[in-house]
Every structure is written in structure tokens, then in C-alpha cells.
Image (tube, rainbow, N blue to C red; front, side):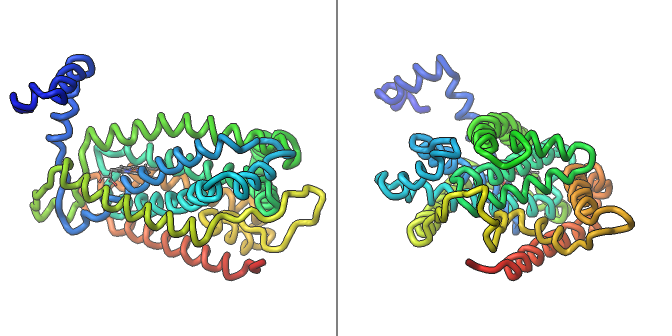
Length: 366
Ligand code: HEM
């Protein structure tokens, strides 16, 4: 900071704070940070976009807490009141619902872009592990949040979803009871999901996201192998060049969110009735659809084992593969091209897109 500005009120405040919390260190850090410039650079914005949408979730979720009541008797009515009576309540709830979907979409694109660019190569293995942890947490937020309005569709989707958990070999029964707070989906399940949604997962996310962002800061952005080999070393300063571009993206996301929330507000449907027959068209959130649809296609028995169990174990192994990629992809670790892992990644993307489409094509609209 120059001497002229150091003497101004703003400068005095800066000096006061700097002496107490070390602002100059942050300034030095921000000035030093550079972002590589190359033709794959657009993917560097996806992590920041996920982070922005997550912050929108925290703010709108906190506002929803002022009115929401977590019990089977009052949850639905409290959301109904929020939508009909509270000023802009419908908007806050709709933004929370849309931003959750857009956040998971941004997260998937972020995941697959860092996967295909092999950004998990040494020394970023732990950045990758923490990312997989964030994926699990985000899916947990989606699964638990879906039930909270206690409407018919969410009730039966949760029944099916937790039933699938119950089919996990060895620990399934335990997991089912742990999630449901008993044998059935009841008010006890709602209370549990609420606790997980507003306390357990936010606590975990602070830890894992903190680690993720610290590691991104520590290692800087990775440069994809082909760019590295070309010897292209161009960079741009993070502050202000990259940050301003980030902010333009966030403002666009905010505009899209506002438009979606205003024109297609979140629905509430009918209140859940555990004794009513299951309605037609029960479906999970879109990001679980490919798994749901796969389980539907599997025959009832595969090699003498129950088809559903084979499917669940298959997805478990898929998750393990995703987690361990930095160790499995030895060629990338040595700085060599690894087309096999690129092709597996592309096949997984195609599989998810096709099965999601088939899931929606097969489920009747109400
Ligand atoms: C709530 C979820 C997440 C948030 C908020 C988040 C945030 C970020 C941010 C801000 C960056 C730096 C900018 C960028 O590269 O885009 C980053 C980088 C990274 N993220 Fe994430 N991330 C999340 C989930 C994930 C997931 C699911 C994975 C993969 C399994 C992942 C793996 C990585 C890796 C490997 C990098 C380093 C990229 C590089 O150095 O080129 N992240 N993340």
C-alpha cells in the first residue's frame, strides 16, 4: 500500500487490522496467485461455480429454517404457509430447490472435467479424495432435503431409496434402520433427515471443503499433460483477472436461478399419507435416476444372486474405482497419456446420460 493511502482513514483501518490479523499476508497471497492460461482454461471456473451455488444454498437454507418445522404433523403445513403467506417465501424456497439442482450439475461437470484433464495426478491425490467426499456429501444433502416438505412424492421416493439401502449386503438392515429411525418411514425419519441435512452434513462440508480449498490454494491449478508438454507457460493473475471472470459467471448463474425460480417455482403437491397407496410416477431426484433405472433393468437373479444386490455392489465398486483413480492410473502418475482411463470416463458419462434419459422416458408424468 502506498504512503498516501496509508495516511487516509481507510489506510489507518488497514494498518490497524494488519497489525492484528495480518492482512498484508493475505494481500501478498492474493497478488502472488496465478492461473494458467490455455485452451482448457474454461474448466477452471467450474469449482468456483459449485462453490458459489453452495453459498446460495447456505443463505437460502438458513432463511427457510426461520419457518420450517421438522415434524410429520407440521412440516408440510409450515412449507405451505411459507409458500402462500410469507413475503417472498416461495422465491426463497424455489431458489433453494433450483440451486441444489444446478449445484449438483456444476459439481458433476467439475468432477468429470478434472477427471478427463487428469488433475488428480501427483501431488493432487488428496484434493481428489476430498472432492469425492464432497460428492458424497452433496448427494446426501439432496437425498435428505427431498423428504423435508413431507409431501407424497418425496415420502414414497424416500421409502424406495431407503429400501435400496436395506439391500446392501451385511450392513443393509442396520443402515435402513439407522436412516429411518425404525422399520418404516415415519416422523422419526423426518427428524433424522432434518438433523443430517442441517447439522451433520453442514459440519462435514466445512471440514472437507476447507481441506479441498486449502489444497487447491497450496498446489495452485494443475496444467493438463498435453499443455505441459507443449511448454505453454502463460498465466493470468487470480486477482483481479480470474476473479472478475468468476464473478461474471456467478452473476449469470444468479440471473438463471432467478428466472427458473420465478417461472418454474418449486411444487409442493399433496401431503404425505403413509397409509395411502403409492402414487404413480414415484421417481428420485434426477442425479439418482441412472442408478434407480439400472436396478429396474436388472433381472431378478444373476448367477444365483439377487439382481438388486448385484447392482448395489456394482455401484459400490464403481464408487471405489472413482475414489482410487489417482492410484490406479499409473501412466498418468508418470506423466504419460492414459487413454484407457479417458475412455472409461467418457463411457461412464454416456452411461449416466442415457440411463437418466431412459428413466425419465419410462416414468409416467402426472
Ligand atoms: C461442493 C463441491 C466442490 C466444490 C465447492 C469444489 C471447489 C473447487 C474449487 C473452487 C477448485 C479450484 C477451481 C477449479 O479447478 O475448478 C477446485 C479444484 C479441484 N477439485 Fe473441486 N470442488 C468440489 C467437488 C469436487 C469433486 C466432486 C471432485 C472430484 C472427485 C473435485 C476435484 C478437484 C480437483 C482434482 C481440483 C484441482 C484441479 C486442478 O488443480 O486443476 N472437486 N474445486
